[in-house]
Amino acid sequence: MVVFGGRSGEHEVSLASARAITGALRRGGRHEVVPVGITRSGRWISSGDPMRELESGHKHLPDGSTLEISGPPAAVGEKLPAGLGSVDVVFPVLHGPYGEDGTIQGLLELAGVPYVGSGVLSSAVAMDKAIAKVLLRAAGLTVADAVVLRKQRWGADPGGCARDVEALGLPVFVKPARGGSSIGITRVTDQGGLAGAVQDALRSDPKVLVEAAVPGREVECGVLDGSAGSAGPEASVPAEVRVVGDYDFYDFEAKYLDAATELTVPADLPPDVTARLQQAARTAYTALDCEGLARVDFFVGDDGSLVVNEVNTMPGFTPTSMFPRMWAASGLDYPALVDRLLTGALRRGTGLR
Image 1 (cartoon, rainbow, N blue to C red):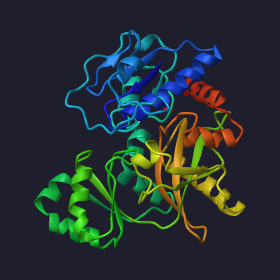
Image 2: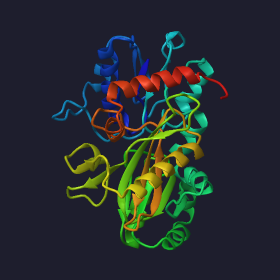
Image 3: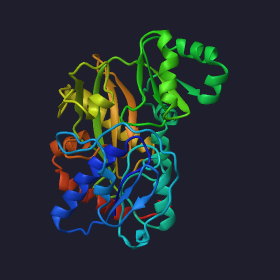
Image 4: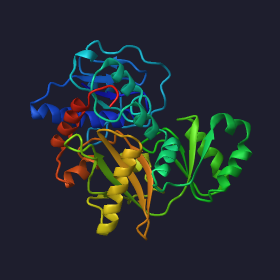
C-alpha cells in the first residue's frame, strides 16, 4: 500500500513523490500496488483512482505535477481503508504533520503492518526541530542557536519574546517548529520584521522556532539502514543546493515552483570534509533513532565546519528529488532504492526493535 496526500501543507509534494514511487513499483512487475489517498480533511480514499481524485481541481504545472501552498484543514479524519490489515507493507509517502510526524506510524504499529521509514519516536522528534536540536547537540553535533516561541507567550509577552530573539543577532530565520518544505519560513533582517514573520509561522504551527542564520553552503546527505540489516547506517555521496533565482533563501517557491536551484551531485568538497559530513549524517541518524531512510541537511562553512540544519525522515521522492539523486550517484538507482526500502521494512516488522 502506498499512502499519499495527507492533511499537511505538503499535500501536493506528497502526491508528486507517490506518483513516482507507484510508477516504479508497477514497472518492476514484482509488486501489487494498492494506492490510498488522504484528503486535506483526513478522508482516506482507497477505491477508484485516489491519485486522480486528489489531483482534481488543483493547479497543474508544465511538468504535469500539481503544487500549491495549502493551509491546515478544517475537518478531522473520517474513515480508514478496510484493507489496511491485508497488505504486506505500507509505504507512507506523507510529508509534514499528520503523517511524517509519528501519527500514521503509530496507527500502523497498532495494526501490526510493517512500513517504510522511521518509527513513532524518531518520526516525532525529527519533525519537531526544537526537540531534534537537543538530541543532536547531545550527540556532539553542532546546530544553530535558536529560541522557541509559543503562541500563548507571544500573545501575552511579545516584547519579552523579541528580547530573547535579539540575543541571536540578525539575520534570523523564523519557521514553524514542526513544518517542512520551507512553508511558513521568513528570513528576518531587521527587528521590525519579527512580528510579521512570527505571525506567518503561527499559521502553520503554534510552536515557532527562531534560528540564528548560519553562513555556509547548503549540503545534504542521504542515509539508509545498512543493507545487511545488522550493519550500521550507510551515507550517500553529498549534494549541494544553490539558489540561482531571485530568492533570499531556499524557500518553498525556490524548491518546487521555479527553476531556481542547481543541484551538484556529488558536492564539490574536499575528501576529508565529505568523509566528516557523511559520518555526521550517520551520527544524526543514530541520535534520532531513525530507521529506513533520512536526509540530513547541513551548512558547510568555508573552513570546513559542519552545522546540522535538520533531519528529514521522509524526504521528497520524485526521481529528480535530492534523496534519490544522491543515492543514484552512489550506485543505487531509483527502482533499486524503492525495493531496498520495502525489503528493509519487511525485515524490521513492527513492535519494539
